[in-house]
Length: 205
Image 1 (tube, helix red, strand yellow):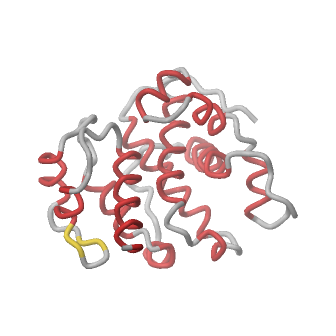
Image 2: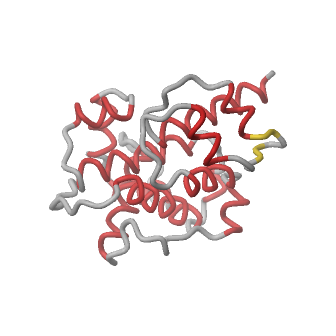
């Protein structure tokens, strides 16, 4: 099911953040949440939130979205055209086999549609329950998204250090993690992805 909406303007980062958080709320409200308690979902959900908002609110082309987020046009298309109803059936356990759809894209479309229906897209009041944050291990991601509100991308290291100062992830100061990343960083989704990859690599080491 393709979402069609008129451009409304506004802050794309803020709208994408609200969609991302609503994705987590949707997953937290499902009985099989335990199956998705995996940190690798975070960048995919954030990326999907941006694709959906940029496609439906800014009316950007797949090429423009791909270039801005650092993904392929096909990935952007797969996210934007995912059948959210099939994905909903899958994550609720009503489908025996995984559908041939972009799962995170479908979840993002469900979250986007819900926020649009109630007129809350991009509102500060969209929140995530603390127990769900703890269960998913995504405290750091929510903190990062909250602190970079309004920050212009692409971004270099120093502005990120100023915004994110004080955050500790897995007993490591975020400044130390930022020192190990490559810059510039094109988007909040890419920032989450790079932090996640660094955490994963450090854990393996």
